Image (tube, rainbow, N blue to C red; front, top):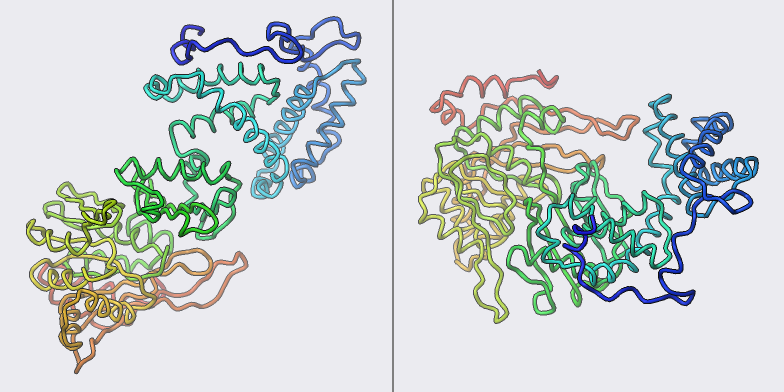
Length: 560
């Protein structure tokens, strides 16, 4: 193993002697001594203490009572039992061994209690506070001390070439040496956490790595170094993750944008980026962000969401899923409308799965995050301006260029400005089946915002002409919302019928009608069909899907 370690370590001078004498003079302290202090005890002595203490713990601590205690309170109780056993056996424990014994007892107790009472697992998060925070503080303090020494002893070029498991093994040995030299005591769990934290800083995104690995987390919001929020099941909660300081956050932010050839600094304090897995990232730093660098990550879903999965999750009814599948197959131009974090991109991905694999699709986004499954997809991404303020490529320019690329369908991640006019013209000139998203709270509001964005193109058109283009281009508006219970639901499917005077006329095919809230805080209601004959029935007939469409819109409110 020495040879492996030398593959990483520099030929650095030996560690300096401490005030107590040369490094060789202070060998590791013996962990468990007999009361007379003459003979070192081996690991069997610790096992003997655990063998005696374990039945005492089970005898004195009720499963439910122990599971509902704060971890620190439970650890104190375990500590008293360990001390009692040590005294009765005439032994002496170093502080770090006492802590290890308490941790082993505590974890063993919780594991057995959970097996005997599976229902207790649901309350586990409520009793992890103080102890977990204490362990985390110990690891962070050790990291601050160990990291600069570690960076001085290893060759980062060689380290980055190693596989993570091998690097973890070698870093673990070097870290253990550093802890011994610095007389810093961590238990085995804390040492493993320390190595993982160091590896995440070296190879990944530091403190954010556990949150990125947690599939229950959909959004990560870093509000400066000491406040990191996450979204789980549609609800925001404060995570236990922290950064060392603003410089630590900036280091991670710089690592994110550098990977895609962008930068974040005082000249460019606002940037959109993406992670290697496609997760969308927004970064804003001082002087724009007053309280420190801010990072917002919309995670790329590893699980592919389909309309069938959304139906099972009660995001929409079976009839609505069928209508959306038919609409996509029939090459309708579809506008997905919703608020921030409502699931617009997820729905767009789900609907895009119905596109024929023989079609050529061009996607346009500020930060590429769409997950199309078709083989013939061209992905385009905007480019921010350079230091001199030039070189910017906007969505509008990409839409114009896309028309020269012979696309069958154009998918625009989000309409934000003047590209609305070019997208409407594309939809009106043979690019049927195109899709895009827009920020709006209702279908009618989506059309109003679309009209306003056309005006941002700088082309002066009469309102009636703009509305006529909208009515001719958009076939279907799908409204999605994240409701107060955290569940995303499709609240309306509305069809654009045409013009009546100067107004765009619409009809609802489905609406969600809220009815109440259950004891678990979940909202319930009915996805109700209007029963109206769809305006695009003739197009569905052309594709041989008219009967399926009529059956879907005729489904009764009981969700058959």
